[in-house]
Image (cartoon, rainbow, N blue to C red; front, side):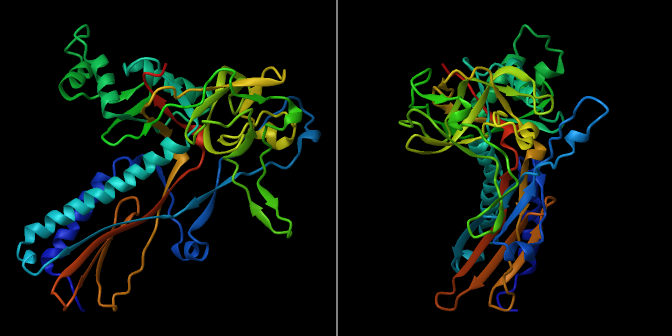
Length: 425
């Protein structure tokens, strides 16, 4: 075969693949969905993944009035990220095999980082729970606040994770390592010696060296921007599994987003987090108010219309689908309610999630082996394929190398993930 790999290169690739697999630490904390690649190619690399049912219950023996159809919601999941790390080596550089290995190691590290960051970016940008802390990171109390909001919104107890920025993580470790604690305590010793936090309040914690930052909201909080909570205003959402176009074609509906109309969209930006006065979160099973204002994220802005997540499913319309998926309650429909923005100071986003709400979708690239390109491929435990390709050119005797990965990340349920920000006034 033209441009075939040497034995040394094949051994080196196996080492690279093993290290690549080990470095996918964050992406191992989410669910993996392995799709049929032929089907994905024919479907434009998009597949609709079902969300878990939320089923209602009723009192009494006679249930004849309650045998109604239930709404199954689904979410579009895409394999849409192709990351490549290419480089060129001259015939004189190829004399040093270690140089080729060092370049390969650098490419491997970058691609592993790309996958880990893709997971964190999706959670940081699209999650809807928001924990606002007025002080600096201080340890258990902060994680307990995350635990509380997850419990109140029905997030499963197993597989909960919180990823701190480095400075915020070290602030949590500082709380655990204080001298007032006994230094024969394993937790205190690890926090002191290694700045290690570990599991707190049933949530596994992780330290990041590339956490995202969020700018402070430009819009003024309080009552400066308002939204009508009256049923007639229509600022509530009715879930639906499918919709019918004017042509009669039926298609799936992405129920993670909705559009609301506010008094002013000036200075409102994508990613801002906010609450609406009198709109309280409910537990998804009991439908009982938590007594806490529901948190929302801005997805996009057009004039005075905001695309937000999650939708306001307040059961103001009274349909069966609203009763099934109700996520909030309007406690006083008196007309207008003030919108208060929560990200008041620029800072790091510390994402948290439960494993089942985020999916990693491995993809596959097909490179013909008879086209003058040498190809080696291998899969990680999660099914992510790492491809190494090589092609030599006769013009300058240079050799081109590249590593490639193809994957997608989807947040199935934005209400089972969130972010925490510190030092917010």
